[in-house]
Image (tube, rainbow, N blue to C red; front, side):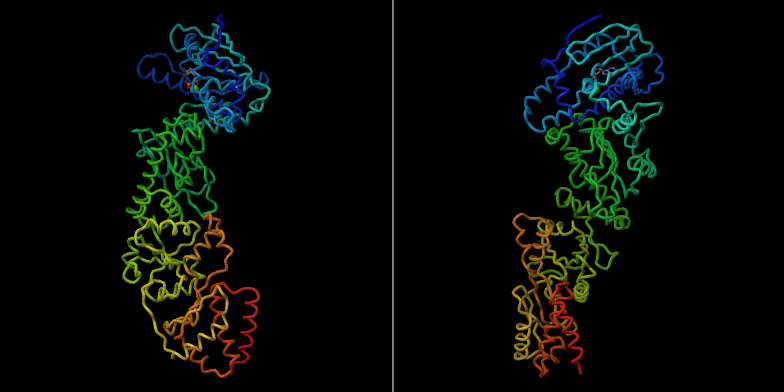
Length: 610
Ligand code: ADP
Ligand code: MG
């Protein structure tokens, strides 16, 4: 029997392992099963190059639980290890990287957390074991089987034993604090999490845990639509069918495979993040793919697999890694290309899915300029009437003649609530304007953001001004009233509507436009909307301001000729007040005591009618 001290660069790694790996104990299974997979894959390689000529036999990796002996065993039929190999690969722990790391992060609050993500490979078994045994028999002819044992002190034992079959068995004697792992359910769920798609069969209590051949490892040409949909179901059994997917398949300059699915989004508040799983050679690593996947695509579902991202991921590591940056850029490009392809080849399908796709596209355009460049071609805006979609270019072609303002900017008119803003929408349409829907939360942010990025475009909500003024063209309409009549009317309104936040102006609009029109100036309204959403630092004081309202009196409306003829002064005043209130009411701006007064006054006016 050989006895010796495990050679590490720090004096003793075990206290470090026990102390610092505390957060993520379950990864010991991932580490040991991946070692077993590696050993099996190595053997298969030896078969293919003709070095190993024996029988492969059953190569399944078996995970066994013995509650009585309090052991977990992971057994493979891979290459195994000779005594020399155990000495070389197990007894020499190259720990310099971790030592450096510890020095760097000593005393930092999440230092332990970061180490928790550092796979320590085989030695992670000591997080949960009071003793670990290795039984191994190498594939090499005449190699003697060996047993290695270590109880967590730096001393190990190594001896020859007899072992029938080729391969390695790691026996972990689970320590008292880790007895939670001596539970079938727990083991199974850990295996399902980390080992679900490993390339070598893994069995536990007679059942195979994994699909060794998941869709993303195949060539896109080998897969049918149904295959992609079935794989989605395998990943998310309860989700609705995805809209479409992107199969990633790159080997140079980095290696990346995977399938990203666009989920169907019914309501934007139901969006779920963290639905993309990161794998490294089919070993599950994490579902925290921030930095690898661009922020705006975090709502996608699916799998990405890159051996260039090591198992030992930590946030600080990922941020600085050049491969991660490249992968991120690649995914963005792929998604943009795919959207562009669907848009060009099947515009109808694209439009039908726009409710869901639009969210990604808008979010992407706001956060990623490269994406925006491509998305400018396929961003759609839906007409308020529904069913008709414009790209920016198409809107420009249809609307430029009528909707270019004095600064030569294209004015895109939009409604956030087509039902509530209907009278404004109708007024704008009567002038031949195109009004699009911008109904969602992301739209509000999108408009603010994109207006700055798009050249010569400005967005105006359809109720931001009276239809004649929506496109600021520097024209002035005159009224049919005499100067004297105008003066009287102005006085009447001035007396009836005297609130500092309401600005009354007189305009000569067409006779069939409303007699009084209430609008909220675009800029002020946006500020208040943003403040209400809690955005924009210094903007919060806007939220407390009263609504700033423009009240336009259409002096050309025939009702005023009638009212001005009226001899009864009180009646005249009531009528004017009522017209103003009606306009406020149509914009949901009449509430409380004002609303009550309006109702009472209306009833009175009815009685006074001759
Ligand atoms: P890594 O897997 O990153 O090399 P580990 O600490 O997990 O680090 O394993 C160290 C080495 O021990 C492996 O590279 C391999 O040579 C050997 N080894 C571990 N487990 C097995 C096994 N089940 N069969 C054969 N060799 C193994
Ligand atoms: Mg390993």
